[in-house]
Every structure is written in C-alpha cells, then in structure tokens.
Length: 328
Image 1 (cartoon, rainbow, N blue to C red):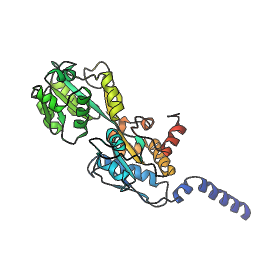
Image 2: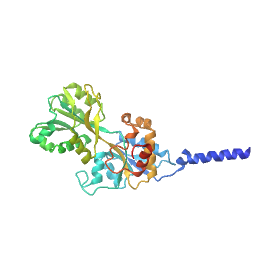
Image 3: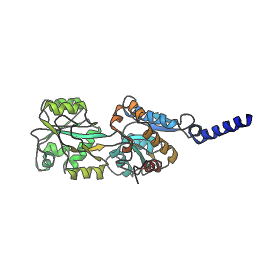
Image 4: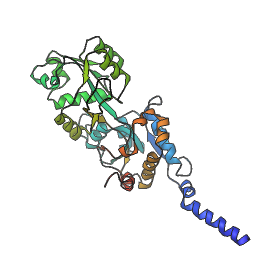
C-alpha cells in the first residue's frame, strides 16, 4: 500500500511537471510592455496580456509601463528601452523602413510583429451633395471642406496619406479654395452638423456614436474608397483593406470599401520564441479576458491576429499561427 501510494504521488508529480505546474515553475528575465497613457485603452490591454503571459512563469516577469503612443513606442522597443509594445501598423512600418517623415534616419530593422489586435476603421462621411470624386478633383481645382482630426492623431495622419495618394495634400485643398479643419472630434462633428464642413472623418471602431450622428443628422453617406487608393494605402503605408458590412449604419444597404488601421503588439527579433508563443496562445485562448480589459475586443476574433502585419512576424508568433491553421 505504501509503495502504491508512493508511485501514485510520483506519477502525479510528473504530470504536473509536464503540464501547468512546469509552466509556472519556468523562469524568464524581466521584460516591459510599453502601452499608452493610464487612462487610455492601450494600458489595460497591455496589462491584461502581461498578466496572462505571467501565468506561464514564476513571478511576474512582464510588467506594463505607460508609453508615448504609436510613434514613441516602436522607438523605445527598437532601441532596447522596452521589450514589447503597442502601435499602429503604419507607424510601425515607417519606423521599420526609416528615412521618411516619421523617422528621418535608418529604420529599426529589428522590430517584429506579434499580433493584430483591435483595429480602427477609416470612416469618411460625405454630405449628400458631395461628389464621389471630390478628392480626385482637388488637384484640378475642386473644392473640398473636410474635418481631419487633431494634429498628431491617427485620423489626421490617415487622411493626409489618402490625399497624397490622390496627388495633393492639405495645402492643395486650401489652395483650391477648400477648408481643412483640424481639432477634436466633437468640434468637427458640430462643424459638419452646422454645415461648416461637408466631409467628416474619424478613424475609430464601427458603429461609433459620432458617425451614427453624422449619418443621421444630414443627408449623408459613407465614402466608398476606390480600389486603387486602397491598394496604395496598403502597399505604401501598412493599412489593411476592410469592407464595412452592409447594415452597420442605418440606411447603409451595401458594403462600403474602406481601410483598417491595425493595432499591433510587437517586439524585437531578439526576444525569445517561447514567451512570444505563450503570449499569442494566451490571447487566442482567453478572448473573454481581453474583452473585460477593453470592450473593443467584442469585435475581434483570435484568427485576426496574423492579418495585416506591416513588418516581419516574430517566429514565436508564426509557430502558433501555423499550429492553429491560420497561416501556411
């Protein structure tokens, strides 16, 4: 009896070593996950991911720290001041490539993508009397009155890039007699409702209340982006094609071609494969915990993680994506 009890205890211990008990006994050097400000959505997102990863290791090796946003975070991770980060795909691509307006030096080629998380969608509302070709007409003198977001915002960045793909810029709009209104979204929405501008834009999750109001309060429609412009935004700036489904907004009977601005978890090539694999695995298997951290994950599914990586994907993430059958 005593021998049987000993054998049973030993076998149980071996099972623990091969399972969760072993994972929790594993160690990893300290790592920081740089996010956004404590009151934004990136901080709780990074904190939830860090906590899930830490369940695989002894202690709490991954800690979340506030960051400086979509441009500052890749600079911090790429220079070794942080280990993981959150950023937007276009900024990651620009910093990876370098020698551009975002990073006026050689690119940080050590950056690696881990997972695409909650995307924001480029949504442009045209007043009823605005022609579908309004943006294309600017370089020939067409007049456009548009709200583009606050200086430094992802929305202003995206609209500026779109206008460049149309062969003009904000100065060109104003030179043609149009208006480029910068500022916070509520002020731009008021300007659209008061007919001070005729085009309202925001890069945010679909069904956002401001877009619902813009579409309901005036004779207005969502801008259906031409395919060639979408192609250029994907190839040159790291956006992802996205069709806003029919019925997303009242009166929207057909899908609308647009773009997604990916939010990407990233690290460097030097980060070991195992912790990156565990990070992706935990995110895939704990969607409800991510939703609890940030409600935007309601519109996210784990198989979206490999989509639209603007820079090379870390091998640890690829390992999980292949196991899940999401990539070849």
